[in-house]
Image (cartoon, rainbow over all chains, first blue to last red; front, top):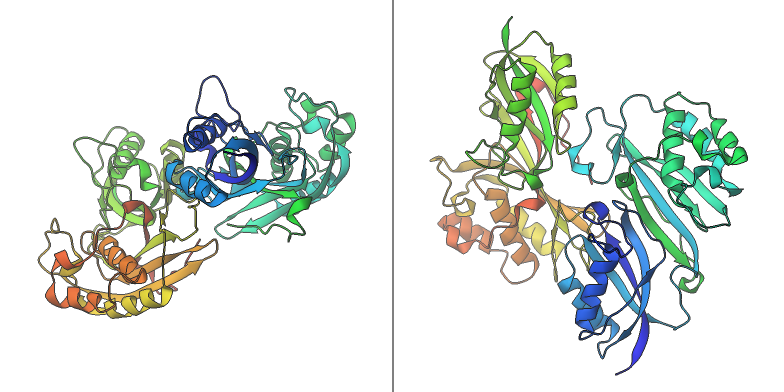
Length: 261
Length: 261
C-alpha cells in the first residue's frame, strides 16, 4: 500500500467548531476531518496542515488542507468516503493527489476573506449565523475611503491581535472592497498574500466605526503608521468572517473570486 | 390604557423551533413571541394567530401574525422592544395597528412558499440549514413538465398528509416554478390561495423523483385525479421549506415576489 500526499479543499460552517486547529478539548474542523480520514485509511492516523488556521466561529467556503495518507483508496474513493462520513457542517469539495513537496500554507500565494454584514433594520434571522447585524448608521462612502487607505504593502501590526506571534508583519493587501449584496446587506472583501491574527476582524471593527461617523477616515492611516493596536476599534464578531478562497500558483491563472450571496 | 389589534410580520430560522404553533412542550415561534409581547405589555398575556402554522423546522421570510394587546406602547416602541428582546433566530420585521376585524389567516389572499435545493456535488455546509442536498440526477426539464401539471384550481388531497383535517381540499395554485439560483442550486416556488398540510413537501418529494427519472411526469396527474396519497413520493425534509410571502388585499397591489438567494 502506497503512501501519498493529498490536498483537500474544504468548506465548513464554523458556528459549531472551536476553530480549525486541533485542540485538547472541543470540536475542531481538523479533529473531525482527521478522524474521518483515519477511518478511511483503516485506522492509520493522518495529520493535516491547513492554508489558514481559522478561529472559532469563522466559516470557510474554500479552505485548503494537505496531509500524507497510506491507503489503497484513490482520490475519487476518498472523496466519496468523506462525503459519506463527514457531518453536515463540513464538506470536502475536492480531493487530489499532490507532489509530496506541496504545502497548503507555505505555497498559498493569496487568500481572500470576506466579512458579511446585515444592514437590515431588524436583523434577518435567516443569515444570522453568517453575518453581523449592524444597527444605525453605515455610510458606504466613508467605509470605501477607509478601505482605500488599507490597500498596499504595509505593516499591519496595528490591526493584529496581541496573540499574533509572527515577527514579519508586512503584508500585501491588494484588494479591500465593500460589495453591497441584495437584501439590505453586503460584505467586505479582502485579498492579500497573508493575514495576521484577527487582522480582518480588527480592520472591519474600525471600518464600522468610520462608517458610523464615530471615527475619522484618517484613523486608518494613524493605526498603520503608529502600529498601535489600542487605536483600533473592537474586534468584529467571528460569525461574519468566511475564508473565501486560497490561491496557488500551481492552480494556474484564476478569475478574481466573485462575491457570492 | 387602550387595547388594540396589532399585526406583526415575522421572519425566523425554523431549525431550533418545534414549529410555529404553541405546544405543551418544546420551543415554538408562537411561544417565544407571545412571551416577549407579554413582557412588553406589563405581564398581560397576548394570544397570537398566524397566517400559516408552519411545521417543525420550516423557516419563514415573512409570516404574518395578529393579536390583541393592551399597552401604552405605540407600534414603533413595540417594534423596538421586540428587536431588543427576541432571540437571534426570530425577528419582527414590522409592527402595525390594524382594524380589530383583521385576521391574519382568514384574510390572506395568497401565500408563497419556496423550497430550496442544493444540487452541488458535495453539499454546501453554508446552506445546509436551509436547503436539501440532492445527490444524483436532477433534470430541470422533467421537473418543469411536472410543475406545469400542478398549476390550476385542483383538489390537492393526493398531496396532503393524512393528518390534514380540513374538508375542502380544492386550492388554486397559480404559480409552480423551478428557479435556478447561483451556486449549483435552486428553489421551487409555489403560490396559492392556501396550502394543505405537507402539500408543498409532498409535491417536492414527487417532483424530485420525476427529476431523477424514477417516475413518469404523468404521475402528477394520476395523484391529482385519484387523490391517493400513497401514490405520492416521500415527504421532502422540512429544512428546505420557507414561508416566503403572505399577501392581503388591504396591502394593496404588490409585485410578484422575487426569488431571493
